[in-house]
Length: 496
Image (cartoon, rainbow, N blue to C red; front, side, top):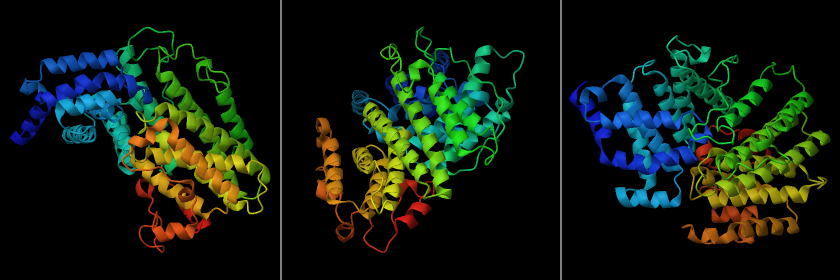
């Protein structure tokens, strides 16, 4: 290696800032982040890190391909953990290192990218695939969706190069190593399906996926507990995707697909049940609350996606409209509960911001078509849209998604022909939600919008340039959702 490369590797590995960051953020990764996808096993990572730390001044060791991949993985753990640090952890990190947590997270992500670029395709085994995956999750949390999708593809290709997609094993491979490979593949396949369903991206992984599931009994923290493994939720989510994609489109009716999803929802283990979940282990395993609500979101959002597709073909089918409305309202209740659990520490988790926004946009579409005001649950729909507006407003200073979803939802609401009472109810709901517990008092954007401003007439909004970018003739700025979210059908429907 030439000197600049060697210097970069040595500087990264030997930096006291890197050590301090991992000391403060490493445990937080396993407490607050790893259960999102469950690709790392804490005892194994800790052992690898300690070995790496003890040899960090050994230049020949640092320049080995496997060490470069491990160094990149360590930096990814830092960058991801910082995104979800609790407030006291953020304050301590900023105090000791002198930079904002936003800048530090970005710095470690970019340093990991620089090291990752040194690795030829197919080398460094599972660790290389893992560090690429965590690079993609970091980008996703920062709402860089196109870059995230491409890095996800890089992780998939690395996994395929080492035979994870065929469940390839060698005689000297331990059961734990094989399980780690399966765990990564389960996460890759689940996320790939999600990106295809939500952002209309082509599948990276082929339609056939026969890799066995990882163990759902291994505690990822290494601590014995009666709680189920954190890996179980991702397996359950993937099972739904596999069964729904098991037949070709058109071979399964809407009713059959809905029934399949409902069967999956009703068959979830008691700890994740929709109706009466077992919460006995919630204190010992706090990730269960997160995973329970995340799975509930997955179930309802899957049903809603099926109903959207059906209404795209038969937009006036009244029983479809009523069914979709019921699902949307149930989904919004879960989204509100999920937001309440996650905000503000887990605000960057994608579903916290996207799901309520996507549901509200769909409900706005149904309200727009309801010119005769015949929808039986119209008031509840308006309230649900208000909940989503409130969530988006509160997220604006925590994630890029907050600003984009707030702007788009305001544009949609401005086109609705709401009755005076509905306008007032919507504005009051947003205002009351945003004043809860005084949380907005610390937000630098200033005062909470009044109900009049939340539901101001379109002409007034355009005069004030609230969201039309300085000209009423310009198209709406979709921000981070531009080019990834299906806006075209709504933009024509709402004349935006």
